[in-house]
Length: 213
Image 1 (cartoon, rainbow, N blue to C red):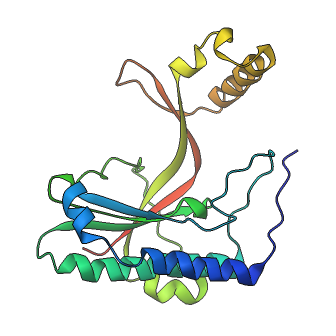
Image 2: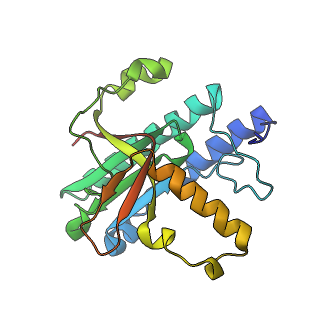
């Protein structure tokens, strides 16, 4: 049974969200010019924490969720203003993950890296309409974006399945992982055999890719 960690200190979390937004709202153009790409992830405790006790860290809810999405929008808008000063093409997008909102981020790229993110996500042929009505007071601003539907996926490879028992901490770990792999494979996962190592993708939700240019 998965234990869910209780979220306490609502006002403190709201302050942390504001601090995260303010820290990231200024795009470092000098760094961008040298690296050709940059990104901003949601580094807000407790949502970005790593569990060391086995408990499941929940995604942001209600007001925290709204404020984080608003923060992503504010960051995008400010980065857009800065990128426009470069007077050249650029890639700028919000990646909005649902339901795993805490994975969401703003990303940008220029020059030879401008198409770097084109194959980051698998986009099904059957595209969905972005459900902006689910975002309350943010609906109007979200509707100013063009949203592409992609999959939020976790992955593993055939080489992971083929690992010998001595690659694990113990026999129980090995048996447990083999059972997990077998259970997942029976679900009919998306696979890619184009390389030497077969790739398996587990659908976890949606990734909405929001752009304006």
